[in-house]
Image (cartoon, rainbow, N blue to C red; front, side, top):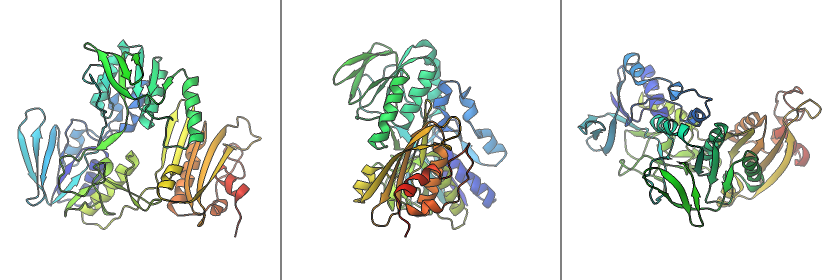
Length: 443
């Protein structure tokens, strides 16, 4: 069996390794546009502040290991530009030599990930304007950072906030510009205010409701222009989101943003073609529909399922509930499930429980409060979503609630969970139990 995988990162190589383990006779060719395989993209911002000493630390397995140890024909600088689904061929060109190539396949996996979305801005070609999605992009940024004292970050989502933190911890002045009215707008307003106040307390200049229109400078960027003003800066990092890399895949069913629609086996709308990771749809168990929430955890899981099915097994991806967590200075920011806006868009009638809870027993030293916002469906009492901002213990509660969401538990059933308790770790009623204990009624 000839297997071609387009993309050599999380989803692609998770699939490749499952095929290697499960089908020794499979001939696997991986076509990667760059020259770096299997690296931790989520760790890139922490190279800026030195928590990760070098980008090499982020590489799980290099291309030579895949070739020599696992027998995978792992190509670099091979950019795919077209798929002929009738003849079962992929074609493209070598990025360095511009030489064309063509490979036949029995099974094809598209695992091309996503690329940063870059708004159409004037003078965007000036030096000193960056996105950071790949190791080469981060290396280029790190070459320039020692020569600047002021950085402007555009975008206030996960990546934008992580970059703001790590640049500030490097000792540089930081300006954060966002066209919306709130930082981290995936959260509901009560919690985003905490994040805004933290940014200001850390000396970050925050400009909200500002739409960037371009840049000024000769060779290097010297200023950023919005619709209301001009702001001097020495370096710009754009973190305004990502878009699936699927432009070359014509004739496939896609979401509105271009993500390839896949079923629970990771099969696309075309026979013998699979997709996984940030270029594919992600079934949302809460919404009960295809969604797009690009995360490294999902990419690895979808890649594994795709690889097993390509190898001849019958495995299913059970979907996501939308779980994520972020560190912002000394804050932990976590969420799982839906926020109010998403629930409203589904015409779900929900009740919100907003509370301040403790991370550990209230009488134990060094108690740290957390702000919690829990959403519950009015009629069924099923859990809908949880958001928490605090300084400690957020990860545990988000993971507990994500498990409860996955298993379609109700608000009152949270009280039945057998969670670990000792004063240094939790109150006798854990933080996620506080709302149902106070407001729930057992039937």
